[in-house]
Figure 1 (cartoon, rainbow, N blue to C red):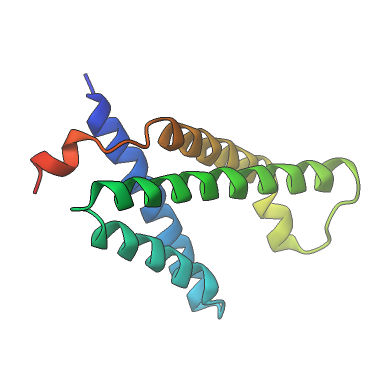
Figure 2 (cartoon, one colour):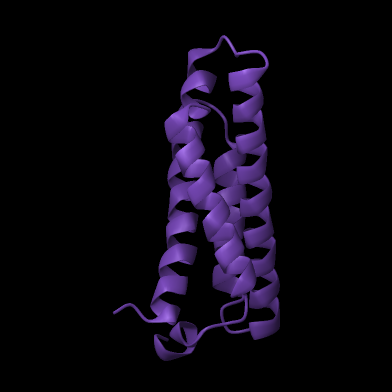
Length: 127
């Protein structure tokens, strides 16, 4: 059985790793903004791990960012499907069924992190 602190850590760590991986991919093709943002939030987590108040603020910002990002992707995907399809193949793939599933998962992760933004015991026990 998974403890709540383990699940929280898994979701937080998983969302960070996913965005770091996506940032690396975009850096390879020439867009550096995603990797800069992913590294900034990762460094913020590392710098505030001993400061509960600031750590909670960073988690809240990250959770709200995940929620906004996923809602925007869902809205753009729905508009793309029902209003006017985009012609670029990369955007079609990002906003298709697989992209929608990823957006919904990220939305659930963001909501979970926002609801459980208080610091969990995993930070204190593993250091």
